[in-house]
Amino acid sequence: MATPPAKRRFRKVLVANRGEIAVRVIRACRDLGLDTVAIYSTADRTALHVQMADEAVCVGPPEGQGSYRNIPNIISAAEISQADAIHPGYGFLSENAHFAEICHAAGIVFIGPSPETIALMGDKARAKALMREAGVPVVPGSIGTISSESEGLDVASEIGYPLIIKASGGGGGRGMRIVTSPDEFSNAFQTAQTEALQAFGNKEVYIERFFINPRHIEIQVLGDGKGEILTFGERDCSIQRRHQKLLEEAPSPFITAALRSAMSQAAIAASKAADYVNAGTVEFLVDPEERFFFIEMNTRIQVEHPVTESIFRYDLVKAQILVALGEPIPSPPSRPEGHAIECRINAEDPWTFTPSPGTITRLVLPGGPGIRVDTAAYQGAVIPPHYDSLVAKVIATGRNREEAMDRMLRALTEMRVEGIRTTIPFHLEVLRDPTFRSGRYSTSFVEHFMERRAQASGTEPAETNA
Image 1 (cartoon, one colour):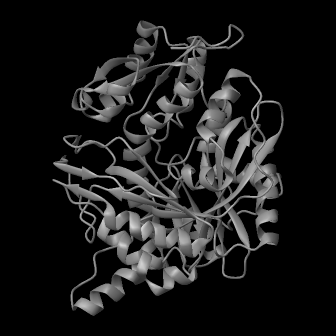
Image 2 (cartoon, rainbow, N blue to C red):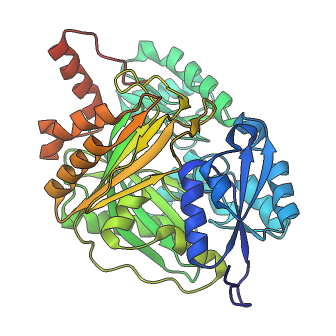
Image 3 (cartoon, rainbow, N blue to C red):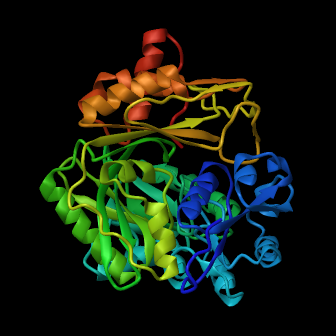
């Protein structure tokens, strides 16, 4: 393997993750001439990222807490392999400020923002207060966390119903409860606290106004390490179930040029207020009147980053590594080209979303013009029950939205995954749905889509909201 120039701050990267994002990071490292180290649990001995890396170290048992979240074992793996940098991917320890701090203390470069920034933006209540100070519009709600039911009821009476109770220390749909009336508040508050404690080790929650039929729009940012914040337009992530994203597209069919400019400027202000370095995402809710409100900042690469890469012709993961190396990064094009859509293909029943782990007995991946597939799957690969059910991300790019949708339909029709159930049939029906094709959808799309489908078939709809 080519030896990087001596001026570089590191030469070997340990990838503290698994699955398709680990494969994605390994490929970016290879493009830069960097050696790679994979970590794996005993359930992932034959995983693709283990096969692709230059070295691999087992860090524990199948359960994530004992392996991919096991900080001492991961640091030991870095020391044993003499890795001098760690890329956390997304999920697991990617937004763990303590992990980033330990990396720095051990003399290992953490490829991401500073521990201080991660801690600040990981505390949703503190982040919201900072955004308010920076002049970024925030969702009406509590100032800080709520310590008791009585305090929460007082805030609720001020902002009105419906409202949503959210875990201060996390995201991804856990520790969230929607409340439509005062008599629902007590049970929802206690349940949200319990879930938050179990998922994030922190039972603190805060309260926000809940918007009916908003869009979930996020702005990709990249702090270049020299004080500049680059933006890469928006992604529309409104197609989601239980606050979990299922399909994303860029640009949004809803956002106007003026709104895009205003949201990008707000994302820059948010990033500068947080002293942000490396790749991140500022997430907003946009109401039907085109008013936007900050909800959180993800201090890592996102699952859906390929749609941005596709329309900007830009390698965000490579840029992450270059920033960490202290090297110049290329400026993005001033304007994106075309349209991109990503479908997350999960190992789940397509209509009940019940997990479907197992062995892939046959795999045929799609190709052709405008199709990209990010995956760690292969024929004979095992999808374990211990982790996220993502099998592959299929990304279709076209000259316009209609061509991207049609290419995605073609790709998913070609794709074959046997031995497990997947969400491919769900995506095929969504892509043919008139509401989706019109672009006039919101975060309630999946709920209404499942209701319409159930009515057509005379069955009860699967539960879609928490």
